[in-house]
View 1: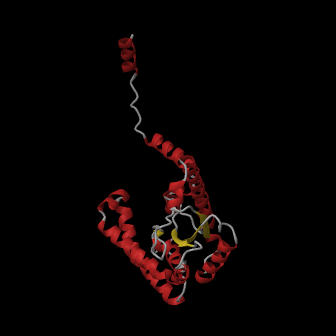
View 2 (view 1 turned 60 degrees about the vertical axis):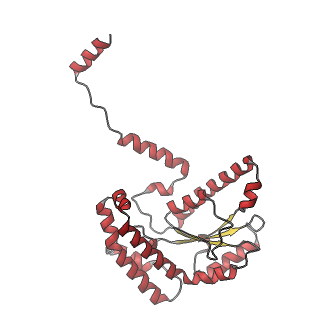
View 3 (view 1 turned 30 degrees about the vertical axis):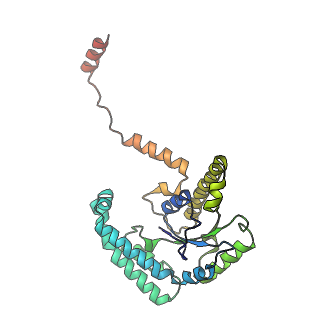
Length: 254
């Protein structure tokens, strides 16, 4: 799940390749535009204090999706779908109790405690996901003092660990259109490499990794290999011919 920039502008969108890697990593991503000419950056930082209500909203939206999308149920299988529906109210209650107790940035201990007690299955809902903050910066600011300044401010507002705040040097849409096809291809390669790095980072900082899907923690080029191997393993096997049938087929072919 990926938030739009909180000021609502999408003039500097995050490339699709990066978002694909983020979604598969099982993290909630909040994108912050940190361009020098960004007028509402202070409002974006202030908005981060309200991250709890955002998570509650997304959890409720998840419930609506589970209850109203038949294709989702068919894809998951009825047993898994029922388990997720039963777990949702408990996750929502844990989020609400945790927010009321802390009155500040949300931590996930309450939800994880429920999972440890087997009261809630680790269903991968938005409430059980960590938050990864992404600073959307321009090339000039990438890796410089400005990025470090924003990282410290986000840490102070949210209590997030510094290594969970990632800075991405992005090109604007106008700059991308002005590039040659070769340059655009190089940029796409950089974004793909960033996605792989991000997945590895998420795997490192995640406290508990679900065992049911290892594929989300491996690079893109390995995912294809794993998928092909699984397809080969699950392919229907040919029936063995009896000796008599094998003999007659050889005689017929000769």
